[in-house]
Image 1 (cartoon, rainbow, N blue to C red):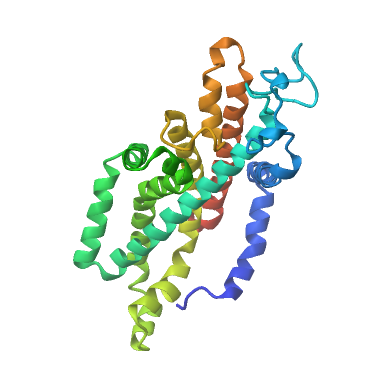
Image 2 (cartoon, rainbow, N blue to C red):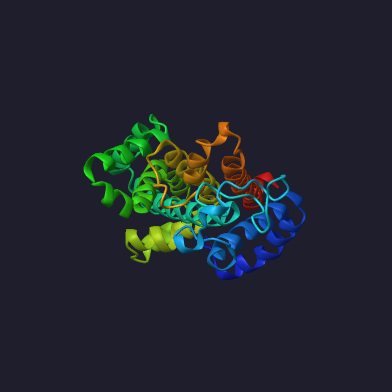
Length: 307
């Protein structure tokens, strides 16, 4: 059996689209994701205030409740924060940062886990044993604990200015490193099945090297499970960023994300200014639910055994 060809991919697209259209939850999740991502990407053009530009803020508009409350004012639909920043605008900018961190962290996890999983599955022996024992050791620590450890170490090594400058790369690295074992174990299991098939033996007889066989022959046949896990892992990465930021080990307050907005708003929750924390938390819930629903559909659609 040869590696997956473009023709087989084209044949599967109509069936995949039909499966998508038959699933109301998948359609709902996709529409919600499109709206959220579009709002985040268009934030510089549609937001009323810019948290990076103090000239757009007015302290006279601070701490206004949502528009439908007695003291609410248009156009601050979801109210304002203590600096006069529009909550809806802050959510759009925060969502932009959270999505970017989530996607980049998953890219790190996928890249690292896929490479190590391919090596462990194809070569086996002591390289595979070392890689999988390292993954097993990391599995004993909750991902958020490892991310907190990396965040704490960075605070001890870097100056406050350096922490602010490298905040996003550090969070991406912390979350990416904490999730790679999931992908390594998945890829290793798939490679153990694929490496004994005829098309791999044919490639060896043709003189192809291990790198060519792993990347051009085996990897295309294990892309589907990687894509499903990566989609679901984006939700975990976004939640991880929010948790780190809420605990003070993630992004600083000057770098708006859903986590930093929830952390800042929580300080005013018991003073009656509930909108500062409730609406960012709802935005976080919506994006996580949408990603999970879409990932669940993708898992079922790409797994013939679940159809």
